[in-house]
Amino acid sequence: PTPEPDPEPDPKPEAAFEITVTDKTELSYTVDIIPADKEMTYFYLTKSGKNLAEHGLDTPEEIIAYDLEMIQAEAEVYGMSVEELVNDYYINVGDIYDLTIQGIPPGEEFVVYAYGVEMVEGMPKPTTELVMLRDTTVASTPVEQPMSITVDVEGANVDLLFDPLDYTGRYFIFIEPVSSLVQSENPTEEELKVAAMDVWYTFLSVYLQFGFSLDVVMRDYTYEGEQTSSESLNANTTYMAVAVPVADNGVVYGYPTVNTFTTGDVEMSDNVLTLSVRDVKPRSVTLVVETTTDDPYLVALLTKEYYVDMTDEEIIDYYLANFGGDMVINGNLEFPMTGIEPNTEYLMVAFGYQGGVVTTQLYT
Image 1 (spheres, rainbow, N blue to C red):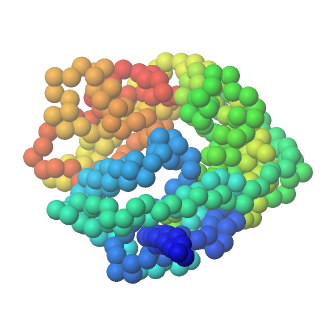
Image 2 (cartoon, rainbow, N blue to C red):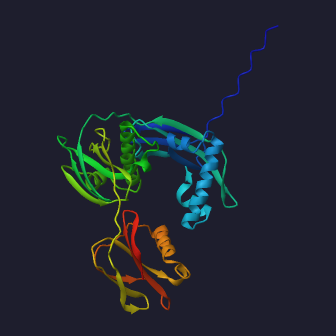
Image 3 (cartoon, rainbow, N blue to C red):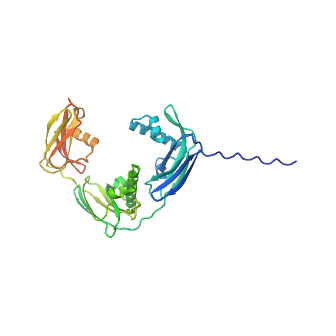
C-alpha cells in the first residue's frame, strides 16, 4: 500500500503585532507598530534595555505587571481614575507608522513592545501576548577634546572658569556632587566621564520629551567660548565640575573634562534679622526683613498648625524638610506675599543658611 503522506504541520499562529524599525540614528529611532487585529485596543511602550534590567523585568508577565502598577500610581498622582488615564494617554487602535523616539544615547539598547488590552471593571486587562522588539541606536565614539576648568573654593562658595582652549564648538556644563552620580567611593576618571555623558544625554532626553526642539536645547543650554560661574554649594562635599563638548546634532563630540573639588566649612553668621509685616490684608501681606550683614538666609510664613508646640530647632527642621534650602536671600527684603488665608494666624520665621548649614538662630 502507498504510505500516507505526513500531515501538514499546523501553521504558526500569526503574531498579535508586527514591530519594525524603519530608521535609527545616534539619538533616535523610528518604528512601525502594526496590530494583526485592526479593531483591538492595545498598549505600546518604549523603554531602554537598561531600564528593564534595573527593575529586574525579565519576563512578559513581569513587564505587564510593572506597567499596570505604574499606571495605577500615575493615576493617583494626577487625581484621575485608571480608566480616564488609560483612555487619555495609553490606549491605541489600528496601525502606527513612523513613531519616532528621541534622546536615546548612542549605542544603547532600546525596547519597543505592545500587547492587547481591554478595560474590565475600570482596570486594563491583557488580551494578547506581549510582542517585543530589541535593537540599539547607532554607536558613536567621542574624540579626545581637552578643555580647562579652573575652580576657586572659599568655604562653600565656588568660582569657576570654563575655558574651551582650542575647541570652537558648543559644550554643556554642570556641577554635581560626585556621590549623586557615581556609586564607588574612589571613582576612576573613566567612571566620571561616563557619568558626565549620561547626565547630558538624560538632560537632552527630558527636554526633547517635553517638546523642546534640539535646536532650542542647544541654543539655550549649551555654550561657546569662556564661561564663568559663581555657586554657593553644600559645605564639606566633593563635587565634579564638568564640560561636555557637544556636536550640533546633540551627540557628545569629545570626552568630557572633569574637575573634582571639595568645599570647605561654613562659618556661623553674626547676621541679625529683624522681621516685621505691613500692608496686612485678608489675602496678602508684605514681609519685611532688615539685616545687619549680606550673609544668606531663608524666610517663610507658616500657619499655626505647622509651628504650634514646636521648638525653634523643630521649626527649622520642618522648613528644610518641606521647602529645602535653595531660596536663600541676601540683604534687606520687602516681599509682597499673596494667597494667604483670611482670619488665619501666621508666624513669620527666618534663619541664616549657607552651604547646607544653619548659620544663625531662628528669628520670628
